[in-house]
Each structure stands twice: as structure tokens, then as C-alpha cells.
Length: 173
Image 1 (cartoon, rainbow, N blue to C red):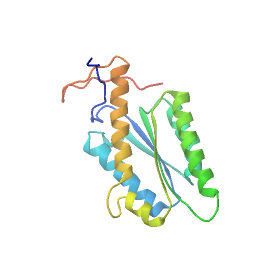
Image 2: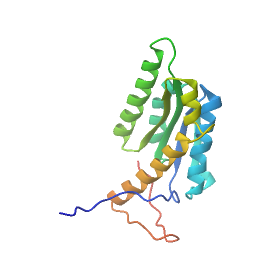
Image 3: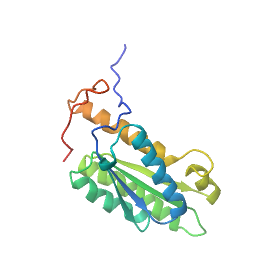
Image 4: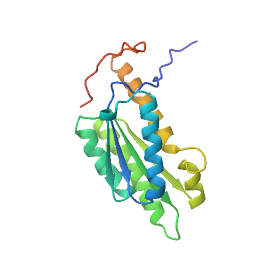
């Protein structure tokens, strides 16, 4: 048996994205935002198709992501932050609630809300995942957002279009 496989394409043209970013650990989080913007731009998102909302910390990401998703202005929301384990249980609460809250907001609205919160044991691990030394998880989560919005468009009856013939689709409400 050969089932039909569906997956999104990597074309951001015609979609709108919100990035909700934590200011906590900004020296790392700002690198994640830069990575996300790089991916969106490389894959065709126009400058006016991306808005950034800054919140104090990762714990505050879910509510702002929910509001962005509920606005009907965005096809996907990308939550970005950095949480590094310390000597107390604070890490577990912040990381866990950010993950649960973003997932809940996505399920509640039907708008893809992606988890781009780097959660690490050490500062060195966070540096490595924020594009300072090597890979950038912000870039990766933006790529995932682009793929998911394209997959959802196809699932909602939109067709994949050859480059240069993209259809305009209304924003998800």
C-alpha cells in the first residue's frame, strides 16, 4: 500500500507571521529572533508580513501568542525565548507552562503557534542553540512555521502553486 503523503512546502510568500519573543536572556533570544527573520525573508515573506511582540519572559509568551492568534491577522505565531536551568525549580515551571500555554493557545484558535523556546541545562548549550556558535533554533522554528502554514492551506482546500503563481488566501480567523 502506498498512502498519499501531505507535507508543506517552504514558501512564506503571501503568509503573515507574528513572532512573540521574550526579553529575558535577550543576548541569546535576540539571536533566535534574527534567525527566524532570516528564514522568513529567505523563503519569501515580505517585510510587512512579519510583526514582533516582545514580552518580559517566556512565561508571558502564551497569552500574547493567544492574542496574536485571535486577532486574525496572522497565519502562524512563533514563540521565542530562552530558559536555562538554574539552582531552583523555577526552570521547570517556566519552561513547562510556556510549552503548555503555547500548545493550548494553538489548539484553542486553530492557528499554528510554534514552540521556539530554547530550554537548556547550561548557558553553553543555550549559546550553541542560539546561533552564536552553530545552529539557530529560531531559524529552524520559522522554517517549521512556513511548512505548517502551507500544509494547513493545502488541507483547507488551497492548492500548492508553482512559483510565481501563488494564490492569495484569506487569513485564518
